[in-house]
Amino acid sequence: GAGVSQSPSNKVTEKGKDVELRCDPISGHTALYWYRQSLGQGLEFLIYFQGNSAPDKSGLPSDRFSAERTGGSVSTLTIQRTQQEDSAVYLCASSFLSGAGGTYEQYFGPGTRLTVT
Amino acid sequence: AQSVTQLDSQVPVFEEAPVELRCNYSSSVSVYLFWYVQYPNQGLQLLLKYLSGSTLVESINGFEAEFNKSQTSFHLRKPSVHISDTAEYFCAVSGFSGGYNKLIFGAGTRLAVHP
Image (cartoon, rainbow over all chains, first blue to last red; front, top):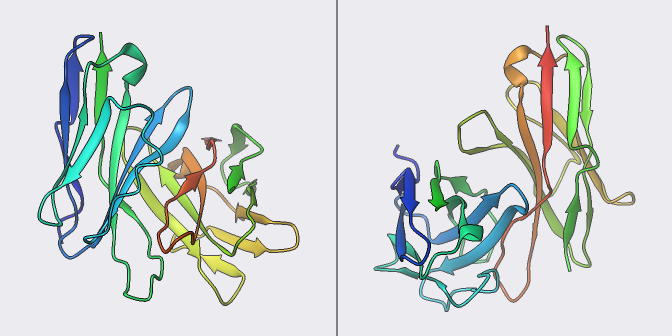
């Protein structure tokens, strides 16, 4: 079946511009995650959505970062007033969590490489 | 708080030699442990996982990892590596807190297999 897809695959933007990154999770997966992979910081958790619960935003680095998940499926990560330090690969993952809260493996998308010039 | 330490940033090894990639974690709660692999210019793929049960887990391509609770380790091993195993390997941990979970990753180990 189809895996997690992300778009665009590459994005170059000028400092100060806003960007939107999109993630389409695997159909039926209830949980969706955003991570950031950068040279200096490695892989960092950003935000987590699970069903209709309030998202866990504890990993967002600043208030310039926000994300939403519409209809329990597609998610958009928005970065406002981009800075050069925002340059990274942004990874989306999804997983299926049982009602008992069991953890299942996260399936990752190919990522969006963001370059802020 | 949970954290993951991968002790080696780079591991060079010759083809057909054995390899061990080390991973230690710290957590005050029960954890689930994962190894992910990232081949050059590709996304992250799950290699193997430990959730419960047998402490030795295996992947389909010959890797294995052993959960050692007393040493809080989850080292990844392969008895004979191939050129195609060249990749970056990430150890990750997740645990329960308030009914949700997220992955905490180590810094990664770059495995370079030479002919």
